[in-house]
Length: 193
Image 1 (cartoon, rainbow, N blue to C red):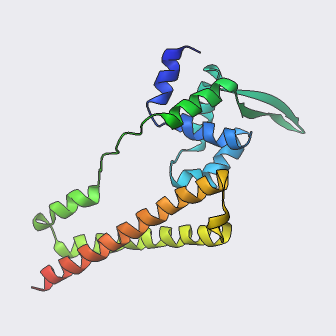
Image 2: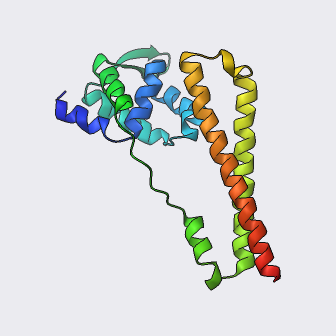
Image 3: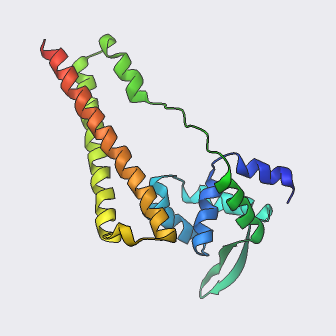
């Protein structure tokens, strides 16, 4: 693999990195990686199973993963992917590269700015619906925290890192719910005035 290609991988977050993280944790088939996305990684970086298979093919072409064909009774062979040494290097370089600040893009924020041009009650209704979705997500994350990390002060390595990502999700959801509460209360006061 050429160093220019490595540079390309280091300066962007992409599905490639999420798959490399998954394979660095444990080898797996495209299906198993998809299941891991459905259970954990996908809460922070989503992808369809089709995107995962397409990206695995690209990673293999670039020499970042290898696979072993495993025979199955009555079905085609399955490919069990493993991260290569080059893939580990790319992943390590990406982890150490600066992360650009993500621009905030919010359809809901723009709608709120335009609330005076529409039906304020409808905007409040949409905010309540978003709040409910984020409360549900927060409840799910809090459940993960209670079930998988009951004593976070004892965590180290991969488990600690997974826990810290989960805490970021929890804090993000808490902040969004608090903001919705503030906006809904303020807009309801405006509507009743």
